[in-house]
Image 1 (cartoon, rainbow, N blue to C red):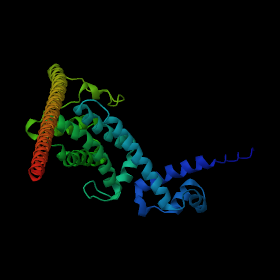
Image 2: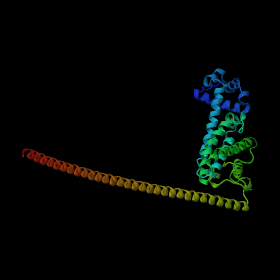
Image 3: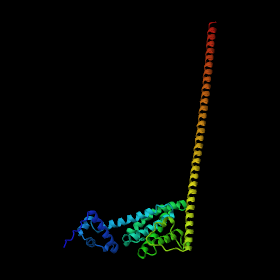
Image 4: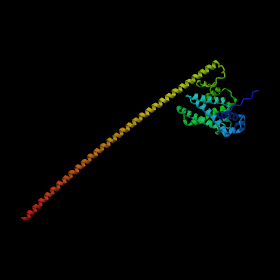
Length: 331
């Protein structure tokens, strides 16, 4: 009888990944408080010091599990929000959340177990808040393009993300209908509103390809095919109209910018002309002042010359009088 083969020793990295996967399953089933280091170690067939060596304790391994799940979900939602049209962004974001719930049920249970989407605290609340901040940027741009107040974007982002997140929590357990249909109904309510609900909602062609392909779809009726074709044409028409409207707005903005630049150039030219006139007036005044000064100097020179001549005449008269007086005295 051959001896049992010795079990292959895991590397440090492999052991760490094993402990994370085992802890993930236990946290999803029992929660943080209901899971112990002893259970994690026993499930991994290791001693407790091994768990402490890798993570320092239950809090450390729980933080790693939660961080991985948050980054995974955030990455999927962020990629979904990179679509070009607002409707497609909404569809793909709803699909991304439902896909994460379907493929990572344990991870989603960990995120929502100890916190509620509307509680404002806990892991799930912080995750929803982070997703809402991304949606807020998208809504702010859409609001600006459509003439709405972009300051309302944070409030609408919370409404929209909260609706999708709570629907996801409900779908986590019921799993009916299929995720593509759930996403279509979520988008139907968010996009059309209660007064404009579509009785047969479906995703646009841009998002429909992201749905799972494993399960066969029911064969639609001829009427339903016509309705879907009509809806698709209407959606395509809406997309074209939105693009045209955007182009018109861009042209208007460019036209306004050019007009503002021309107005600014005219104002600068007027300011330059005014400055040149002021400089000419100042130069003219300076020359007139110089001429006036020259005239005054000439007048003063004439007065001095006249005074000098009068003084010379008076001196000559005095001299003659004095000479005549001497002559009279001699006689």
